[in-house]
Amino acid sequence: TVHAGVELYKHYDCKLIFVAPDALRMPAEITARLRERGVEVEETTDLEAAMAESSVLYMTRIQKERFDDPAEYERLKGSYVLTREMVERINPDLTIMHPLPRVDEIATDVDDLPGAAYFRQARNGVYTRMALLALVLGQA
Image: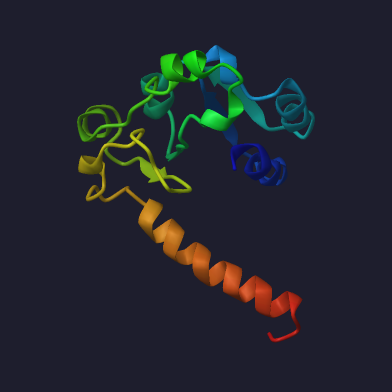
């Protein structure tokens, strides 16, 4: 999701902060393409620092299918867990997005925060896909 989605940001004046364990960094060719188009890119392992300077957090799970070694996945899978306490302490105005389903990377106590947008995001995604299918099939 993230690898494909960042391609859209080449067209906007924005800064992207990628937060990931070193083993899962954004591929260099993607960050290079973004920088070539004038997008400011920062990479870090510090979620809290990134939250402090962001208006939107797009969070995803650490994907088991990206690992050849199950032990490495087990070691990293809980690296980033977003909690209500973190949001309220660091950036209460943060908009939080997630493609769903989540595993354990966003605590359920975040769900009722004003910035928790992931359920709206999922609902709107259904309507967006319906509209795109209608357009492609000539039904629009």
